[in-house]
Image 1 (spheres, rainbow, N blue to C red):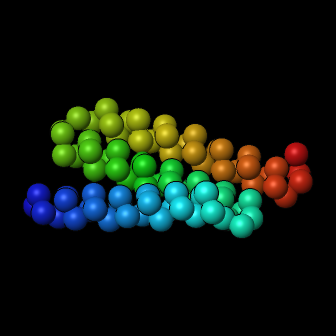
Image 2: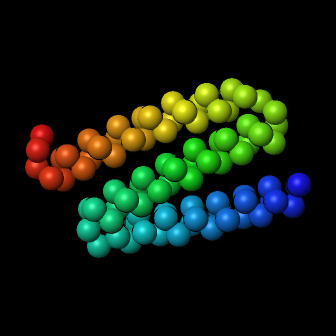
Amino acid sequence: MTYIIYIAFIFMAAGLIFSAIRFVKGPTAGDRTVALDTLTTIGVAALVLLGYVFQRFVYIDVALVYAVLGFIGVIVIARYLEGAL
């Protein structure tokens, strides 16, 4: 079971690296917004996995709050880019 967790962390780290590259290098603001949303999603998944590994369920509560705030942030950025604000 621990090998699966290590593999999951490796894939999450690779996803974080690729998303960070897209966030920095993205040619448009839309690409950067999608990369930011991906970084938030991977961060939430990492918090949930850490909560499982350490048997500390407070990480899951923090992940839920982080997911909601990340979603609201992406919606605000998308509406700003659309020109609706």
